[in-house]
Image (cartoon, rainbow, N blue to C red):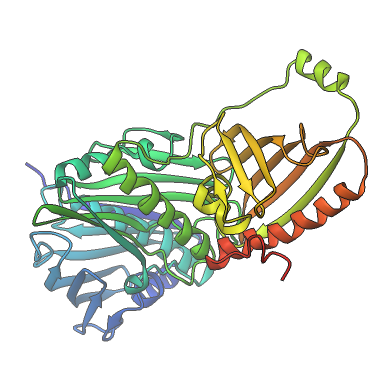
Length: 452
């Protein structure tokens, strides 16, 4: 039976000499973590990342063909740590002054290898995206700073099997806005959050009760200069049994501080891993982003709106350097609300629940939660407070932003511009300063310190 060596091919508007030079500039398209010469016949160089160390010898170096022979490898990512030993990496270059075809083959890297899925996806990225970019623009896509990649962990009492199953039920803890299977080897699924983030994942490894690996095949952010920042990175869940407990180590390999999205992605992953996946494993209910649904106003809705008396509204808009998930938590949970509005808070993040906010021994407000759309909208109706507040409605609208989250607040239903209206508007501004401090620094300035 013929071996199916991994192969990737690109065709570029460049000369064969330009392609030859780019291939030999290995630090420009594969990794900066390389020791030794990469453009001299018979030289030996060493590639290193967090898991893989590979010693290569350049055994052919001609304008039409470059061959690296793998002398020695150690891959801590897999049980078989030396699979690459004895394999060869071959670059064949054909073309003319206008266009060149490059065919890359990792001879010996076949589907029988334990590392095939992860390695083939990685090679596909490095050849068809990073090397191609280097040839065409002079700059590759370096994701080699593995030691600095985002990583976090937690411990639960559940078994490795329960943890493995929960991780693979991605709609239960990350988002319901996912198309495709999330628990089948080699399957691909697509995640999207509004028009802000779209990511295409391939399940590169599913080792029961031990490891889950997703390879990011494609990515789009609408808030970064490089829209594809995640592309070519790996998302890894390591599952470790320790006595009667299970440790989950989550690492997004390639998500480093140099990325423009790093602050937002860091905080978002921290939320989904610690506040959603861990909770999903322990209770069966996570905090996944709910299914997006389009809502169209009806003629009846429009008529009811037109029949309402004209009222006044308080508006505030502010940018918070924290992800929408974190801000939403601050607006809906008892701990969050107490951290920025008043410590004397009783609250449940449930539609229909009554929130109670105390301001000293003699005054409190009560709000009914009328609508909750995780990470995008919170609505209240005031049922107890000063007379002018009663019956007013409060909307907190959240929109992702490249620097975090934009909050648009409107307090509707005021009958007139009064001194209470003016004082309330000013107080909201001070409290939203407190909200921003809480989300950005973990310490707000709630009542009675909000005016300091």
